[in-house]
Length: 533
Image (tube, rainbow, N blue to C red; front, top):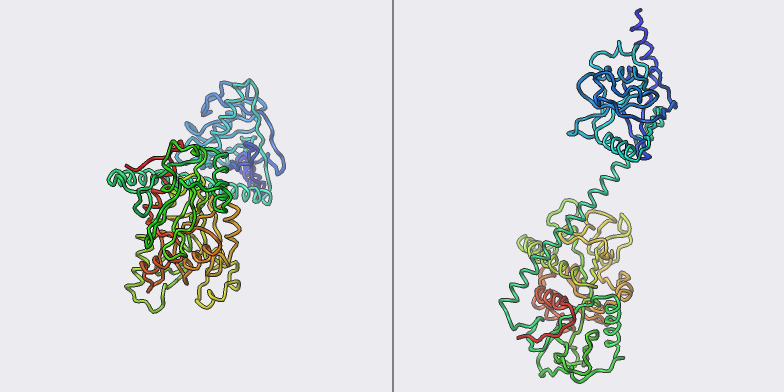
């Protein structure tokens, strides 16, 4: 047996232990493939800690020019111009304790491999120091650190650890987990940025459309019903004004602020009018009671059609919440394999198609526009409610949902809100397993904590869920608005008749465009009262 064969035999014997080299970069271990021809003198647990130096020339294809500075240090080289073994031999001749060859292929930044060009057996006897390959991505970090240390006139040190199979497996698992978490975080960050860009672009387009509508209809009121009443452009630009204004509205609803007769509105018997704050402010700049920081709407007394229906509604974004009901996969996706919901078992195929067509073509685009306007309006809350069981088997459902066969498993696909109207991190999502959101959840407690007194309702009605929501909210003293394009009712329910019923209950019915115009009327700065011309 020749000396080379003996060395190769010893190499195979030693490498059966399967130890793995790691380089410590930024306090984290990074795996580097080890050249087995330089593994004879490496043992598990035998770490190498030494100062690092960059070879000159960088590729190490000839004898090093800086050999005097290499002795006792870890040498960094770059791939290319010669085989791996030649680089290692040149570093070894200069007195290096280890060699790290960096991959120069930026096309695959995470690739790292060792190629001995067929010299493995002969190199096994000649090479006495460990040699490793470092990926391009990790190498750029190391070179940046070396450059920073050089500018600061200090030396840079590296630690090379040799771990056994079990320890290496744990480290590799940790590295993989960290990489997945980082990738997930980057994807979420990118998704948030894309969503913000989409919202900004959609908001810009929405404002452009509204501006065109406003230019084409001069003299029109900012509310859903014609009115010659002056409108106020209002915005709370500071925390103090926001709190002050919200308190004033709460006090005005309780009757604790004296009402001025200058705010009276005479409505003829037999007429029905609903107005927003934007169409109800006093138009007098010379009034002695006028204050830029105080927009108080008096005369909130009951003016009725039949003596029992309040027809004057005052609101502002600070006390308003958009309530989106059941806009989720379970109810909105047609013929979905994961969760199937039929709007009415005896409805025809044409009716079912019309039901889902309204959801996708009318309701969802409307909610998108209203969401953009609501989020752009300072102080307005956005609240989602979805049907979702607290258990996988749905045993916590209400009797009504069990009887109807409605079951949305906890964290299931059916519970996901449609992507086109997905909530942001600052929105509120309230799950429930009953028909009436006010009876099945703590939404009333949440809304009162937020200072909300006005609800704008959109969404999908299931088992009359929107009807009972509006009725319960009115009973609890909330001012209610429903957007006619923003709701989808059960099959067989006439939308005009249903909206008329809501009006008779005391709920304001508005088009989405009218509501958005109302919101935009609050956005002018500073506080101004303008007359429609």
